Length: 106
Image: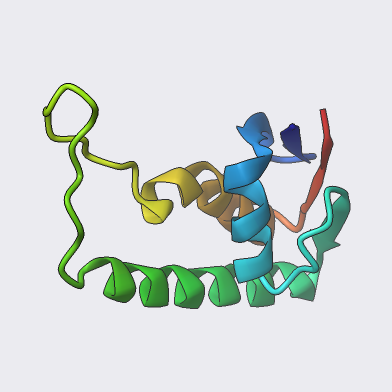
């Protein structure tokens, strides 16, 4: 499943649901496939997401298990923080410019 994020001031982007739904939950949202945030709720959602990403980074810094693929090569997973960058930027811009952020299945 794909989730489309859109904003009146920050454009749109699409993210895989497996990546988007955990970020929505970190934002303090229900994690449903459709929703929106605007006005003063934008700043709260942004702060909640940043705090959740900080906690996730601290957990990820713990010693990891073996990260090799089937061919014996090291696999470097994409961090949650990196996956969150488009959403963070969208939330920041929407908060600065009194916009909104919506998401829905695509």
